[in-house]
Image 1 (cartoon, rainbow, N blue to C red):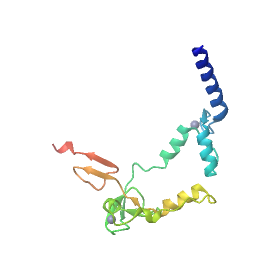
Image 2: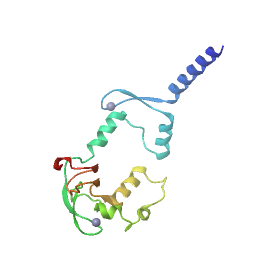
Image 3: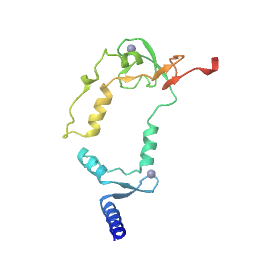
Image 4: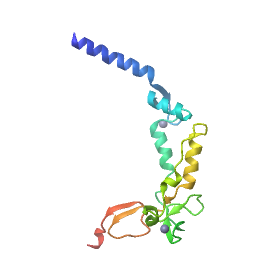
Length: 161
Ligand SMILES: [Zn+2]
Ligand SMILES: [Zn+2]
């Protein structure tokens, strides 16, 4: 009797999930994917359309946005010292050297603002992207601190030992 009750519970849960989850076909790779009810609620709350691409294709798009290979000379917009940056000089962002970005010389809460439900979520994110300072490159706890390494943490230069 307990076993039948458990099977019924599982069957009801599966049926409920199928009803609640939205099944979509990816506009890029044509694979089907699910959007669960909590994600649907989130999209509704943020007033954004449900995704047309599957999670893998969305991840590909996000990664295509990243710069992993190019470095540019620039100037820290806080201390005015020259720096090497992963952002090209024509980007509209505020770039700080690592020391300034990690310091207490500026307050991230100066950029804090309340979410405005009457304005597009993405417009608000874009506005923040344009004003909040970004770190030129990340180099932390490296034995040989070399300015032209991109995103380096906790390493030792074994080649010299
Ligand atoms: Zn896809
Ligand atoms: Zn600086």
